[in-house]
Image (cartoon, rainbow, N blue to C red; front, top):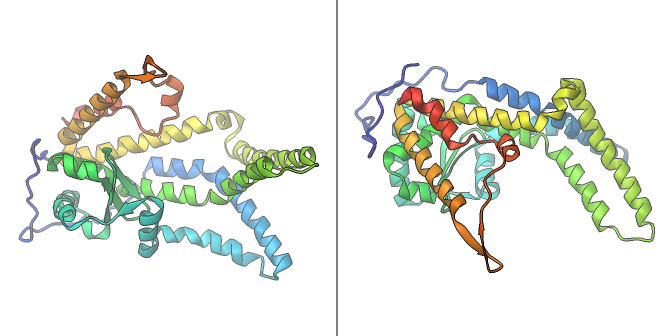
Length: 327
């Protein structure tokens, strides 16, 4: 897809008003390689969670007479709620801490969003716009239809830069990154909940038989962890298991670069580059700033290579490098 003519760098010119004809793409969403990789890497966690659900179903079947298959089937089908509008609204409001735009915010946000979706050939009314009460520059794409921006981004970014940020988030939806992340997290909840519950039991129970309790809890922890490791080793092999966290982070970074490319292909590369340059300058200044700790002047340490490998977002110089072909 050839890059479109970029919007002006200082502001966005709204061309797709009521009198303009907008053609929607036949397939506005797709499943790209990063989405498939994310789902594949989530398989061990999914198997662990399935085991936990099966155990709970067996307990309910024995104690309450509830048929074994009902809880398992309900849990497997619950992933469809990621695309259910009322459930999405609850998710955005109570889990992500977002809110609906105030009238002045909607008057600022909605025209920019309409312009971005019109350029992309997407029906913008399909998505839900939200605002986070935050002083950070950030934006979100979540579930099947959630697009959120921080109040700071909404108030401080020029329209062209705000459009570039929204085009990036639209890229996450267009590539399937948002729903695949939510499903991976959702279907991993039972396994993670069981692991955390065992850790809480190990720390909180104080009895004369503490050693025995700790020993039995440790055995359960090893069993749960061993099942997850075995599932990962069977699916991917032991060498790949050792680099599993790094692979997951690398997939996240690739998804960000693909969303950047989506915005660039729509013509927003110069605006997006300006956003990244500003964020990089702010972060660099923050790391160099000294602050008092215990009466001494201490300089903040730079991010380690290990932390960069585990980061789900590329650094800004890397993202700017990938945008060079569109500038």
